[in-house]
Image (cartoon, rainbow, N blue to C red; front, side, top):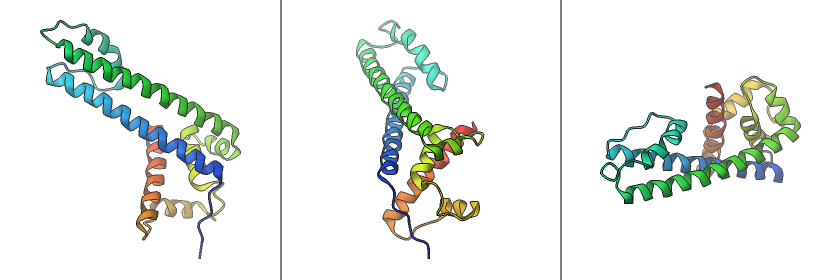
Length: 173
């Protein structure tokens, strides 16, 4: 029978950084989607993608009052301000994660694999440490796909799997 290895304080801290960063990214995405929705309700379409909305926003906010009311301009400006604050926080956390990953030998080893950067490697190290609980790669793959019986374990397992899978997918694109 295999037992779960207790995570170190550093692993728990790193996992917490990833969770906070993921929450901030979700909030930022929600704000961006809300801005787009408000603009679409007024027949103002902006091409999909964060950079296109960022580039078009000054022009949109300068539109005459018959297209975009002063109240809506204020609302969108406030949302854009929230967006900027979230960008700064995400960037700060990403930099902190990158610094940690560059100083960790396990992360450096993982980053030598093409397509795996600081975010993925640090998420994997936070989840499994050095990976020495797995005797072969197949065990790691099975671990990623396992379904725990306990609801709390299932949620934690799914959260780690989603984080690792999401980062792997993003690096592939």
